[in-house]
Image (cartoon, rainbow, N blue to C red; front, side, top):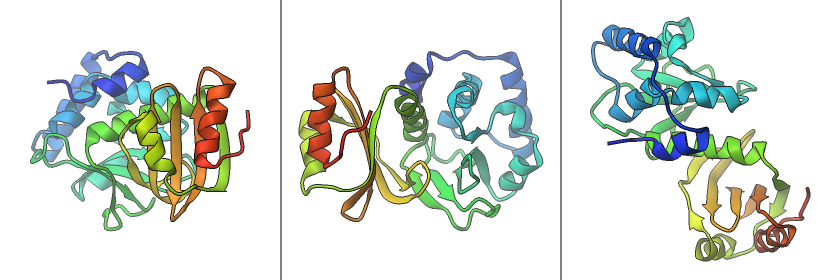
Length: 224
């Protein structure tokens, strides 16, 4: 089965490379076991390279498997996936193949032992999809507002009008949060929530009228 098709669709496809297979085999030889299946597929089909080409964060690619930074995390049982562009946090996944599609954790940037880990995404596939979706959203034509009240029932209202996408926890682009909620349909909407407030909201839609309607729904002042 394919584990990360939704991410590949956003990233423009998938394509394997001989070099990636060799680099992955070397890594699995070093850890004396296979990575989880969803993680293996991501690297074998070039998801790492495609995400790295559009993300402002430092995304671990197969050629980075031998770096001293990556090796430090492997020694603790985790593969480093991504480092925030301002070195505020990192994303890691366990290297044990016990679960084919394991959760992805958020950790403090200098915590090589991953003792500070908290669950960011429930599955690796959710992580790859939201990573690609977020970059595509912010790299496109988007209207955003920051630090505004979130009306009671706004998230439930969004669920009735759009499709709820995977939710992530703990980090919202450049700050801590409770969760980032994502929706898609007639518009793309993301809302980073802390308590009862929106740290930010971002809306992409083909018409200004649609953007204004969803901005009103989440209590945002439309910009852009």
